[in-house]
Amino acid sequence: MAMASSVGVSRISTSKTAFQSNSSPNRSSKVPTLFLRSSSPGLSSASSSSFAGEKPLAAVVPRPRRAGVQERTPLVVSPKAVSDSKNSQTCLDPDASRSVLGIILGGGAGTRLYPLTKKRAKPAVPLGANYRLIDIPVSNCLNSNISKIYVLTQFNSASLNRHLSRAYGSNMGGYKNEGFVEVLAAQQSPENPNWFQGTADAVRQYLWLFEEHNVLEFLVLAGDHLYRMDYEKFIQAHRETNADITVAALPMDEKRATAFGLMKIDDEGRIIEFSEKPKGDQLKAMKVDTTILGLDDERAKEMPFIASMGIYVVSKNAMLQLLREKFPGANDFGSEVIPGATNIGMRVQAYLYDGYWEDIGTIEAFYNANLGITKKPVPDFSFYDRSAPIYTQPRYLPPSKMLDADVTDSVIGEGCVIKNCKIHHSVIGLRSCISEGAIIEDTLLMGADYYETEVDKRSLAARGSVPIGIGKDSHIKRAIIDKNARIGDNVKIINMDNVQEAARETDGKFLKITALNGKVLGNQWFLEISGNVGSSVVKNHGTIFMAFCMVVASLSIIAMIVFVCGKDPDKSEKRNDSVEYYRNGGAVGGCVGCGGCGRGRC
Image (cartoon, rainbow, N blue to C red; front, side, top):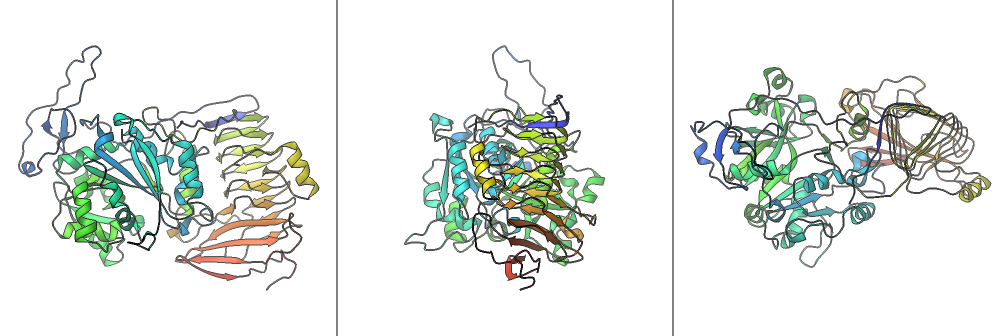
């Protein structure tokens, strides 16, 4: 296990380098009155009945610290909702590693992230030049003293399993050095011949293994979220309110609210109503006064909903009872288990998280989250936080080399070779090779899995192919280039008609380009993008090109197009043209008539 390093570039020109290190912004909020609950160390399980009408017992006064003694902060809790503010005072459990079991859900098929998930699971998608999405929840667990971690996988799990085995050793420390990060793949058994049917079903199928651990709670996490969170405070709130389930929640605006489970809470932060992805009148009915969470009036007006983050602390006995006895047929936590637990009278508590959080579930969210780490003066999410580092696979790569390059507002991964080119507002992944005269703007370049030798490059040239990386005088703008992509000289991937790209898919128009893993763009390529689906023009002189365009023009349905045209330089036969449209998870085939195969429209 190692913390990867990347270069955050504000401006690099020729021989000058600059390193930018910023912490994540800590939003201030109006925190409700805090009550002194206990001065004893460790996490306690106090009764929640004493909250009603309780008055402050004493002011919290810091005591002088004795030399060599680490002082514990007095334990306090809010009668309404517990804030994740860094200013809040909590008593953290030194033995959380033996009392909590982390369960990270590897995600579904990832159809909204296709084609990035064509050959990898969602949590294995590259992030921030050096990392993968799965590194976020695993690092949050380790930084929160939770070292027993299971990762449940099902779809395209090979690369995810490989990354986890290389990044996190078998012994992760913790209580009696019993920590681990272990992959649990979906499997069929005589008792259950089905694959995972949902989040709750995935946990149920391995409940026999989880219950063998002598723990108090299960911490259920998603593997495709970007955020930094102290789970010890989360667990603290769960125990202090004597909850059966605690749901991490955050304020949400109306535009995005339909994509989340929404809740209503009482004055003690208890969830009294839960609705999964409501729409229309049901959505309006879920509006609440979010000042109860500590938001000021202006921000509460902008965000009148309380949304579930899909992150839960569940008491062990409650989990066994819910999945085996109360709801043995439930497949999903958000739509079935959480509302069901609320309806049968279990104590389901909300826990406010008031920091940066992004669900990396769509191409737009993925693109914006990556480019957000280049934001000035403070990025949306910082990988430079010393107090809570993000860990990943140690690769032992050399430092990146920049030769007469002009690099501004960008993040450069390890082991890159960048020659006399211009890079602006982009994220450049591991082992990226960018040749002279290239221009990279507003682009996520994921890099490569390996270097090619000079012998390899000569062999490729003899076959009419090109090496991995970006060729000379190529221009790429607002694109996602997957790993091991081969882009030749004088390639143009640009928005010729200057189609404006909306901030969100729901705004009605959205355009992105993705070159898929290992695909080739030969010399003299030109991709021109116009404003409507099907109006893209691909011009080439042989070799294969696969690009991904997503365009929404006054449509409520997102149309994603994959072009496959031209000739594979390693094979003599022609490839069939195809276009795959993915609408609401379904797919139909057809031809765009790009002419790349020489046959025109099929």
